[in-house]
Amino acid sequence: MKILVTGAAGFIGYHVSKRLAEEGHVVVGLDSINEYYSVNLKHNRLKELGLDITDYCTSGELITSELYPNLTFVKINLEDGESLEKLFANQKFDIVCNLAAQAGVRYSLENPSAYVDSNLVGFVNILEGCRNHGVKHLVYASSSSVYGTNSKIPFETTDSVDHPISLYAATKKSNELMAHTYSHLFKFACTGLRFFTVYGPWGRPDMAMFLFTEAILNDKLIKVFNHGKMERDFTYIDDITEGVVRIINSDTANRNKSKERYKVYNIGNNKSEKLLDFIETIEEKLGKKAKKDFLPMQPGDVERTWANVDALIKDYGYSPNTSIKEGVSRFVDWYVKYHK
Image 1 (tube, rainbow, N blue to C red):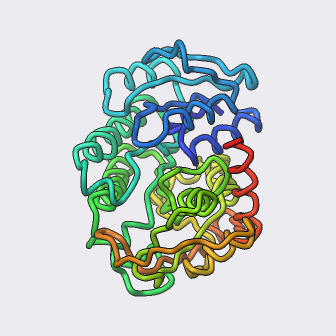
Image 2: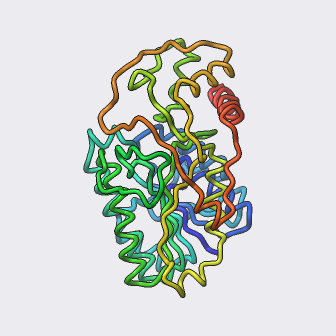
């Protein structure tokens, strides 16, 4: 199959692109390489894919991987509708996996226009590309943040998500609504995935795993919000990648002939871990205690997340099985090696 993966220089997009290329799919990776976090980290992810774009990548130019002849990369902003339209028209994708977005709950309080441009305008451009160029299946990233202050545990996709508490969450809820509309009107399959706190090698430097490890190693304070009374459904990247790829590889012919074209799933670890226990696991791996700065809850944040992934298990055989101890160990090993 020919697959477009947007956000290919991002954390999840890098891992998904690598896995799909290794499986022999024809993959076009797309990213804007924005400066929300380290551009160098994004370039280094692409280098791992055989794509050295640091010196000569121009917008719209397709570059072929030196490691995977079936993988190419193109630099485009999702909000650039004209360039995206040309890409869809020229490439004739079977499947689109949209993992590109302006990420971050707290940053959305400071720079709302970035979320409107990428997550709303950009997502409509993706939908238009799928509509106009015969894409059979759109798999796209939603977020656990859509549940807002939902107190029912674990979170289920049948729960109300009508009260987001950050602009980021509101844009992800909007994505689900827009995807539903396009799937209904234009008869192509859309699968939304509500990701729950993904961590692992090549992770984002604004996420807890990265921040905590960096601070502990450098004898700096780590910020522990809500005075440590936090729980998260921490999910290791390999489990996430496996779930995403299973959905991409699934037969969508029956979906497109039925009323089941549009679906939304939770994708997480199927359990909730205490934040302080998570920090303790990092401390044990590093052999070093954290210096903790206990702070109040941050605006837009929630106290607890926990994904019910029964539907994903039933429909796709999804099986998250990486323990926190094993996942943290792999991340720390990568982090130490990377920063040497």
